[in-house]
Structures are given as C-alpha cells and as structure tokens.
Amino acid sequence: MHDTEITIQLTSDEALVLSDWLERVQMTDLSRLVDDPAAWAPIHRLAGTLDKALPEIFAADYAERLDAARRRLKESMGSFAEEQDD
Image (tube, rainbow, N blue to C red; front, side):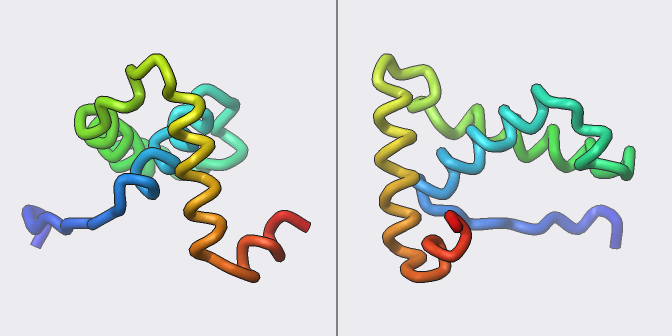
C-alpha cells in the first residue's frame, strides 16, 4: 500500500495561491506550524511539483496574477471567504 500514489487536482488559481502560501510558510519558523517531521516530505514534494507546473511564478507580472487569482478564489467562496477575513 505504501507505493500507492494519490492525485490531487487543482485549478490554476488554486495552484498559484497554494504555491505562494507554501513558499511563504517554508520561509517562516515552521516548527510552530509543522510539528511532525514526517510532514516535511509531502510539503516539499507538493511545493516542488507546483513550482515545476507553474511558469507564472517566474513572470514579471507574478504579483498581479497572484492577486487576480486570490480575488477570483475569494469570489468563488462567497460568504465563507468573507467570514475568514473577519
């Protein structure tokens, strides 16, 4: 069973926002957030996979693309996103 892989599907907006978040999380003091050393393997694998799949992260207008993706995702979440901003 340990060789079984799981596929996760994300929209390009979800992937871009998640990639940015993972990058920021990896650059902080993660010992507070990631208290299980085994969690690092999937975190790094996911971040690396997203980096390879998202040429947008190297675009000159990356910040604008990221902001637009965040806006679209918040809009798609409706009232749930508004509750999280409070």
